[in-house]
Image (cartoon, rainbow, N blue to C red):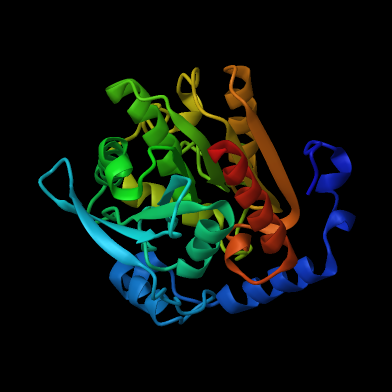
Length: 320
């Protein structure tokens, strides 16, 4: 990783560490031959993930976590999973990944515990509704309403109204959409920072998504296509800013850290979004990790440790 992220050598194969190559080969081996979620059904795949069958280990649940319920736009209930230090200096609204179809707010507790303790923030993870049962705009609506609730209640709940936001993959997308919705629908522009980790920001597909191919390194081109079709079953114009925030007016937004690996189908998304974020006059950092696959932060490896330290330092800095 480097502070000069577009240095050409960073993208050469000889920049990839041996342990990263071994992890990537192991992931391909684990995933090759696994059934696709769109063939066996999303709930079967969700249950397999809950049990640790597949590339991801079974979730480790935090004894520190608690859940509160806030109201949603459609009269639905939105669970918020909270892991907080005794005296948080801010709040981190977290949005989990999983292609808008998979994943859950309680599937990454150890990572959220570490963020809470290292960055000194109350982590609030949104249990948003999933596609295909609940397609767009259900998930974005739930994230918007969770954020709006925090704007009005964080001070009473956590003794601080300093808000940050972030997420991984689809969670990075939903976090960006939430920032824009809060600005445009509520006039709220006081997020201190956005931690956007290998997010999908162009759901009409960037070149790196289209060109990735079929190597089963966590996320292939066909996976993106199937996730988008589940999330947006009736929408053909996928460059609407509320769907693809890469095409939004990005003026007046908070500082952001974009993190992505060079072996990720979503590489272009972070690079393009970082450039547009800066071109709109906002502060932004781009952390590029040689050989990092999609989801690399979720596996025990050196790159994950580097990315975690960078994200935690960013959140510490913007919280102040």
